[in-house]
Length: 562
Image (cartoon, rainbow, N blue to C red; front, side, top):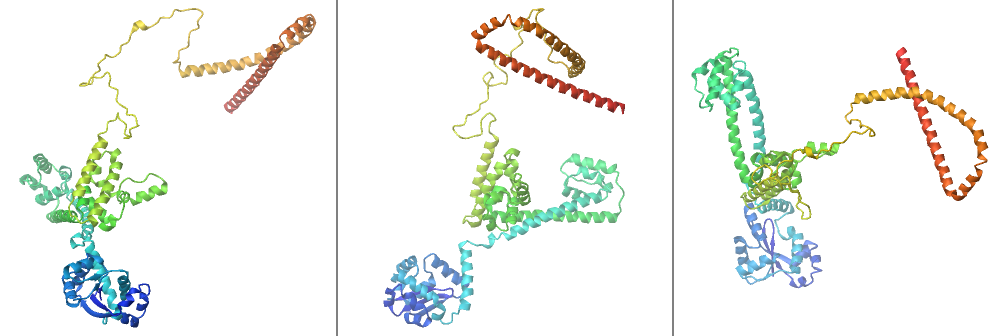
């Protein structure tokens, strides 16, 4: 029996010397503990060496797909006639049996034999050292991994990262140079800054015109599309308030204009290159968020594969890390969007719907990135379908009627607009508006017994004045009240002996009444006690208020005297 063993250097065929040892599977590993004992079990019969790395990769990929390649078929035909072949993959054995008519074996004893061969491989194959086998295995594994991921130089996203970085730098430089041209030439022709707003058109006009006196004789129709702007320019050039400049100054200004125009042309060329690369590498991401936003997401994530590992919630706030950590530190609300805010779908949404749309867009973007990074297809069908779904969701959010509830549950009540009395085609009402009915008023007769009511709309000044008058009356009346109390006490003391004399006559009547209504007298006594307590507490409160008012008046007098 022969054993087929795959190595990074080539295919090896081993002949089993003692097939009886394969029956004892549990003890087979003991035969491969040393190289001497392993040589007693198996012996190298033939070895098919790979010529180069591409040949090794082709053989490895065919073995992974369980099909023998052309070189393996020739090798087996030459050395396996009339022999039984032990293989590590049952599918590969079936393919060899169909194509080459060679009997193949795959069982637990063969797998244990393969483990032993792998353990003593460098000793059984002469000329294959461990120092050579390691780099071969590493290189072949890298090549195989690239093949599995369908690696292609067209899928290199490093170019996108560099291109978007250069594009941002060019925008900054262009803005700086254009502002310098406006400021420099503004000393000679300051009115031109307000007439021509676009920076590129401004540079072209300055380069063509030079001195402002030449504007009358020049035709700016190729640069300025509007005739009115051209007329304003020529009128302003005649009556300009700018200073005169020399020819040398104008020469340097025109050189700077050439730099601005050259940078703008290169920027347009770089943008076209970026669009083509984005449509090749990430077509679905480009269809969802656009070329610039997609390229910035890839650059911020480091690569397309790294970005594919991120969830939708991370993609949503990618680029707003400072705001996120500041919100977490201060316990405020976290940001709703980062770089994805500049996508066209979020720009179309109303401010109150931007958060919902950004969350939905981030989820769809995460799926599109994963398909672009790890998928086999190169079309943008998923991106276009996701964009259509998001556009319909945006229309649903912004097309909701205000009268209906936002909940989608069946149990929630729907609030409908009241339009019972409104015409269907117009905004007028069916029933006329109610008018004032004077016949429903009632006229009340004047009577001397009823007291007139005070008007509710009395002014605050009147109330304040009345309060001051009451305070003065209370202060004057407090002194008279104290005198009256003293007189009442003296009268009560005089009337008490007279009441004692009359009391003897009325004792019999009181005793009869007390016998008839004993319960009522007890209740009356309690009520009288409560009334006395209330009157005493009221008197004490009045005295405290009076003393406080007097103290305040004394303090005011002291302050006035001082």
